[in-house]
Length: 122
Image (cartoon, rainbow, N blue to C red):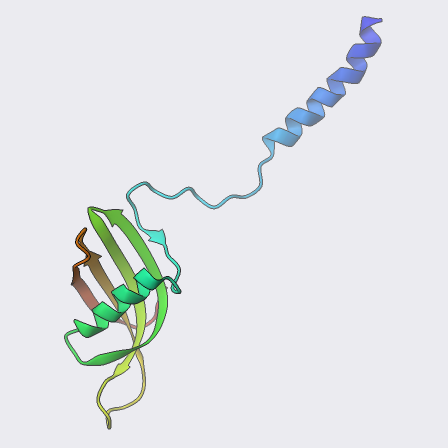
């Protein structure tokens, strides 16, 4: 009597084990303390982008936020890719891309830490 029960239970256990060993493709887990993707629609991202443009070495205006990442530290580091346009009338209207890094401290003070023209945003 035990043998017939084992022949029913054993295949069920094998199927359950096989089903649990196959996991769907997952995105890699975030690195603690590393940069994480952020929504370009987020108000904090927009504020960091607006600050970056206002502190830029050349007068430009923000056309569009292309991508954003943030890193939580003693404050927040923002890594932004922005489409910017010249701010003066009469200058060529072609936009360009800029990789900007902004730090916001715990008192909500912003500091532009990097501003670099790039050919494309990754």
